[in-house]
Length: 146
Image (cartoon, one colour):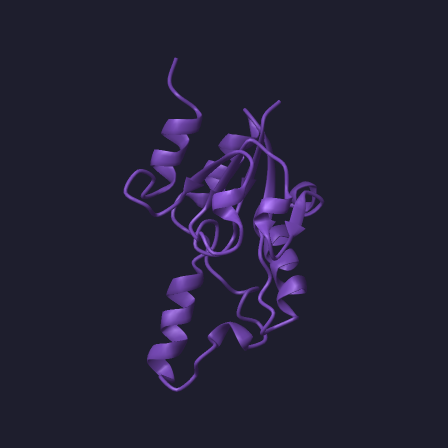
């Protein structure tokens, strides 16, 4: 079975909406992600949970996320988010890594290209790009109608 890795921030969870919300309230707060509770309380992206679960029907699906080194509690908070929204079975399939090119798989769904994504050995599906603007486009690509 082919393996798919899914990023969290900006793909499964609305990192940028929460970031912007904090910055609007306090424009001088340069790194909102350094605040305790930031990652645990992120909202899911539209259709993310349903799409993730649909991918599980066709692929070996894992989470591959880069932790924030400005907030070491994010390791626990990201794990808590996964447990709450996706369950224990996915918590066991969660990898936190600073360089995503080190992980082996067939697909990587990620919105950021600054942490080894372009060097990932499989296909990088660039989420929030022109080709893959949302979860519907990703699902249509990975699970074509037969």
